[in-house]
Image (cartoon, rainbow, N blue to C red; front, side, top):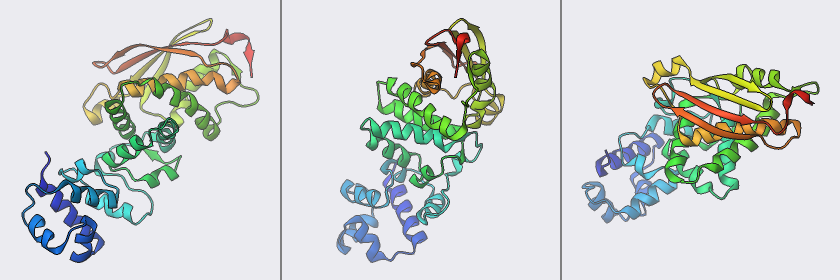
Amino acid sequence: MFSESYFIANTRAIISILSLDQERYLSIFGMTPAEGKKYLANPKDFPAKYAMNFCEYFELDMGVLFSNKFDAKTFARNFELGQPALPDQYQQETNSKVITLINIIQGLESSGHEWLSQTILRRLQIPKTLLLYPEQAIPFKMIVDFLQLVEDFRTDLKLMKSFGQIGIQNLNAKFKFVGPQTAFNDEFYDQFFSKEIRQFDQSYQYKITRFKNNLIILSCTLREEFKEIYHRSSLSNAALLEYKAGISSGLSTLFNLPLSEVSIISSNQLKGIDTLAIKLPYSSHSLVH
């Protein structure tokens, strides 16, 4: 629910937390004292230009500030620019890493969508300072929510696959999936999807159900603990699936090989199971890094 009353209450909470006086409060809106008396005492039909001034000053999302979802305490902690704090809604689990969010945001910005990444960060009340901590654990649900908003704003989600393809290089730089003696074969893929992937994503149970010649069928099942926390069988969305496909596609590039061809076979929302087909660039059994 959105209302001017929520907006005024939220702005007053900010002013109180930051110990700002009435004169400063009005100046952030761009109001005169007379306008302040008119609109702050009776916020019905509050002028949008003043609301936009306030939101832009504090880099806040207008929709959030006009709702009862604004987290004033978290805002206050982040305003001090210390260790980044997340809203209460993201305190239930920490099964992903900030580096995943960094990969997605870097991809958006490199493709001319910096406005979108900034909009989503504001909408979710995620502090930009979080991006300075690539290995910090964060909730997987936050990644899902971020990508759902990407999906809401974008119709072409193939760009998410390219973010995953590039992102695997960043992930490898952090977590060292490939070493001097690593072989590009079925053991590598088994090891990656059973163990290595858990260093940055503990949300799904990944299982290779078929590996023959250069074709891999990968099943991705949401872990039971997530189903219990969120009372849902699936947290997947189209943008997340494309990003997963990009990660899978980019694995071959760690061996200086062409990208693998990856397609989404199915997404079962009722059971929380996504299935990908990975076609390797060459027969993997004969290739060694």
